[in-house]
Length: 313
Image 1 (cartoon, rainbow, N blue to C red):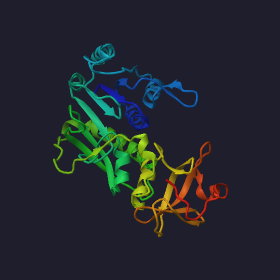
Image 2: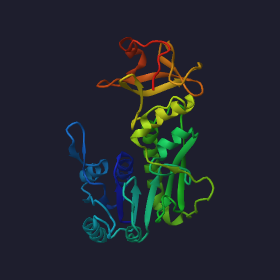
Image 3: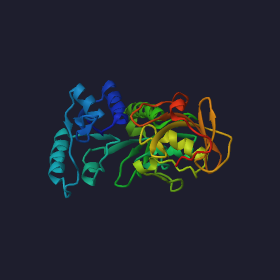
Image 4: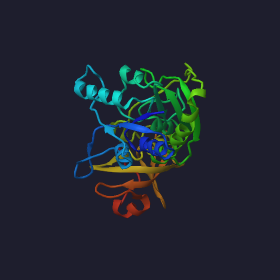
């Protein structure tokens, strides 16, 4: 089959590498436009674009795909390019743009999405983060026929991945990226034999986009939830607490055994300070001060000079 691949971040790049390594004819790639990044805010190509260019695959980077939208010119150019590529199938992974009907209907065999959850649970933009935050025991990859809904298409194949007690979004993302690539490469040769299954109506939930405002720790929440959120928001947006005028990033913690007012420092342990939460307590084991790097909390305790009973917000 002649494939077009649509994707942007490293999760998608992992799948593109696997498709190219397996010898699938990728005739073109759609990816997001270059964005400013780094301290110098220089334009940087997406991970997918870098893989495509290294392999000599043509790349298109439309600002939008709606023929009647504000980027209609870009969309028309993308349409002409896709028609020229004449794909049998489009493989999509974390592309970042909604595919309108004309895109979904253009490949002769439609569009296949690599989604990082066990649908219908965690449809939407942030399935890995939300699965960790919710305390799910497992997640996985679903290969899905795309339709005009939000991750509502028929399922073609699934693979399960356990969520470990110490998983962050970064560590789980890496495993799911590999799993998605493996499942896609294994499924394409037998695509005609895969029976589409409609998603069940029960168990639907949405993984809403992660917002920077969610980084602020709410000490009135249970310690177990805060600990999961630390891992879910690693590497973005991180979690943060206020100590007076200082904002301190909190990357890791473990459940403690104390009780007190939410945000109250209860004790200083060898691996970090223990703070009371709405239910239970949390020992903060990895911190980052402004201008510094992530470090074991124990290494920062002397400079912080914490006092028992002080309150963080």
